[in-house]
Each structure stands twice: as structure tokens, then as C-alpha cells.
Image (cartoon, rainbow, N blue to C red; front, side, top):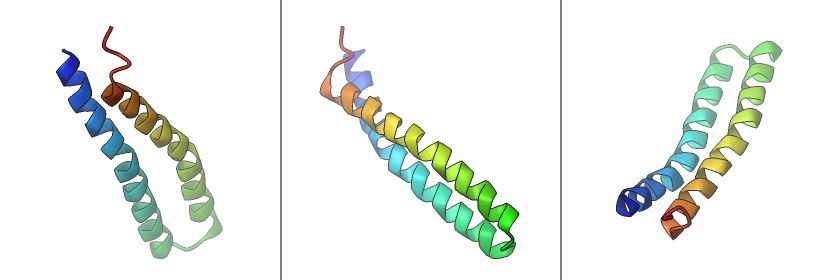
Length: 71
């Protein structure tokens, strides 16, 4: 079970930045399609909310990779 946790730790560490990249890429595409203030505010709120979640995912994965959850 500890090996699975460490493997998933690597996945979580990689998933955090990939999620932020995909979110920003999607926001840029959607804002380019419809460049009104409502769309910009909506995507800025999405990004501001999701970045701390992604940072937490990376931290969680780091600790799983380090072996803090072995017990």
C-alpha cells in the first residue's frame, strides 16, 4: 500500500501544475472568444479559487512521495 501512495504522490505533484496550465489555457481561449468584462471576471474568479487547490494538491503529493502517510 505504501508503494501505491508514493506512486500516486508523483501523480498528484504532476497533476497540480497541469491543472493550472489547462485552466489558464481554457480561460484565455474563452476570453478571446467573448472579450466582455463578465467573462473576464468569471475566469479570474475560477483561476483565483483553483490555484490554491492545485498548490494544496502538490503539497499533498509531496508528502505522499516523501512517505509521511506510511503509518
